[in-house]
Length: 94
Image 1 (spheres, rainbow, N blue to C red):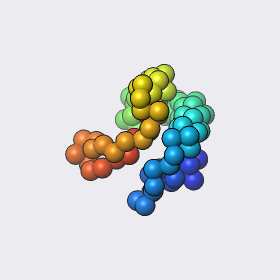
Image 2 (image 1 turned 30 degrees about the vertical axis):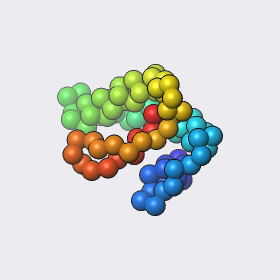
Image 3 (image 1 turned 90 degrees about the horizontal axis):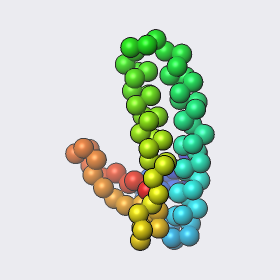
Image 4 (image 1 turned 120 degrees about the vertical axis):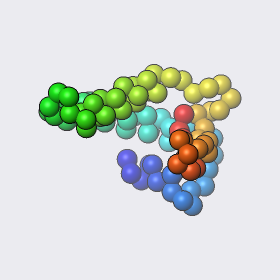
C-alpha cells in the first residue's frame, strides 16, 4: 500500500501515464476498501462518545462516499494538485 501511495504523493513524484494512473487508482481504491472494515472494527472497540472513535467512523463514512463516486468524465481518474483547507498543495486521487 505504501509503495503505491508513494508513486503519486512523493515530493518528486512524476505524473504517470493515463494507463498507469488508472491502474494505480484502482489499486488504491482496493486498498481503501480493505482498510474500511479494519478501521470500523478497531473504532468499534473504543468507548462510545470517544473522540477518536467518532473521528475514525466519520472518516470511514467519507471514504465509503468517495469510493461510491465515479471519476468525472474526462479526468480518467486522474490525480490533480489541489489545496485543502489552506494546508498547502495536496495531490488527490479521484
